[in-house]
Image 1 (tube, rainbow over the protein chains, first blue to last red):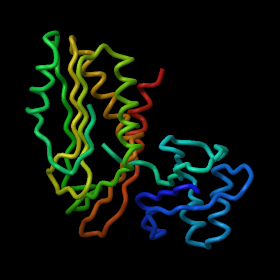
Image 2 (image 1 turned 90 degrees about the horizontal axis):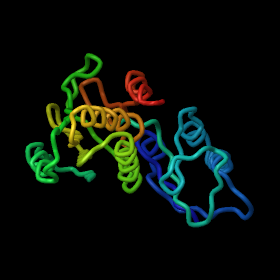
Image 3 (image 1 turned 30 degrees about the vertical axis):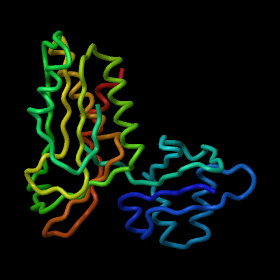
Length: 84
Length: 149
């Protein structure tokens, strides 16, 4: 199982701030996870996770799409930051 | 030391703590960020700040650590508020103490530039024109870029 967190504009579009997901067997990377979510959940998800400037973190570290996801990981999806 | 909190903070209290930290302190530089009542010509009634508990603290910690490696510093104090904020309220404070002022000035600006471009916070403005999420400005990216070697 992995935890997936959604923040800010993405959280609002999807109406979801977090969920737990069973990982399929075999190696999975961030791009695979995004493909899985957008293929199985429809247009709203394609738009939210298909943005060019989407940021992804695994275990609270920013990662690239080819980063491997393991059981027990915490994945987060968010838009560009605006703090300070 | 880093704090993410809803409550307001008192700069003089934080500066007093930095002064007490070391007798070698020759300089203390502080920056305070406030909620403006006007953004892109539109009146702002409220700001909502969201963060990623855990990652936000870690990310600011990494920025502070990098500043310590680049400049000779004594104390660094960062406070960033989250939740609902109104115009004129304080959002963020970065205070740096050092033996010499150039290190304190540089580190303070460096930390703020990276806070604006790297730290996981998201601002939503609410005004008469509706509400919308903000994104990092080009000027902020440019400011952060000048610290690259």
